Image (cartoon, rainbow over all chains, first blue to last red; front, top):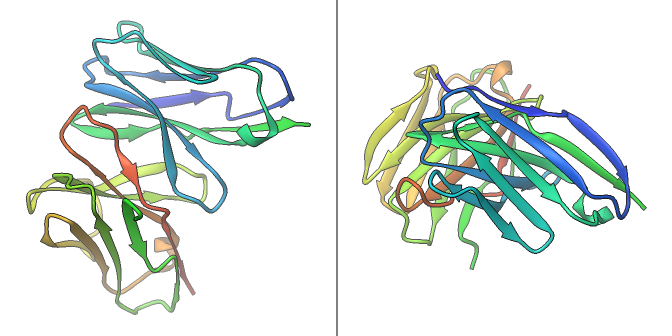
Length: 109
Length: 112
């Protein structure tokens, strides 16, 4: 059964820093991996989707990488801003979506 | 023009009651899902429907029953609500395997 782990559970950084969020999964036979953002009391917003054949995806200041063989993905956020404060979830798709517990990010002005 | 919409946004009810949460998507997606997010923010899949066929059913109590009148709707009915059912429930949809999931904004259920 697929298990998804995200570390750290919480992260606090000053504005402007670059940061990396980590996601690991136990079963490498995946279709894709997706990173989401969740704001308090809100739904999930899809940030990046990486297909199993891809190694990375970029959107603006966000870059997600995928190393399927080692069961790892990272979400890199460049030049962080207070508006980036949210919980970031990774989800792994192999027949159904399995979510990590998320990393709660706080970017301090 | 919300893509995935859930109602109600908040639901407060007493133990033992029966309640439903509605979900509609206007994206033309083939598959719809229900997820439960517990107090620790851990998101777990409950059900998945593809063309009216239940294709995933996690170890969810049979008090929970998904109902899909058509491809654009997947409602969640809960019988005999218990305190432990309190959580945020998210509906989601996707086109086929490999495509991004789109989530609704969630329904916060509180059972007293």
